[in-house]
Image (cartoon, rainbow, N blue to C red):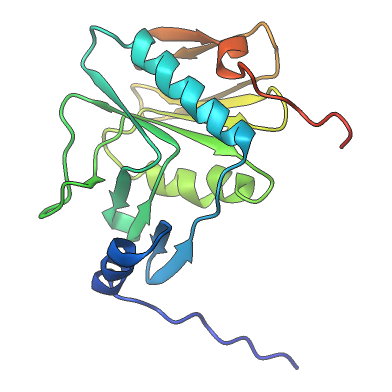
Length: 194
């Protein structure tokens, strides 16, 4: 019989002490500290494209785009995470005593990899839905053109749509803007041998 030893649980204070001294970022998952893996070139290209395109598309509106290094605190589930791209409507609301951790994203993008896709589609989406301001969740595959989108309705239901059309257009319903798929995937190269 194999006995599993539960992971050591850490306090939030221990997490922040590690974050401030480490050369890498980690997520905090209700006591577990999980180091984040580095992103691929496709991941980085998509994040860069999303940042640039959403910034332009939302120009003149009360939205602000943040990339990778802004931490998100989800109090209900005791989770600190770093979304790939998050968009805040209005002013950022910071966690008490911090200027590097926000509480109020309206739109979150995650770029999927083989290692993160199940968590991004599952637990993270559950956690994100507990944020009152959260309106849209967009998952972008880095290995093929495939975009999944969840949009919150006025009745607090979530509508799902997906597309793998190269000539498709992603519409951010809550922000009233559109971004062509070909621009999101600009310079992204897919390994066709898989």
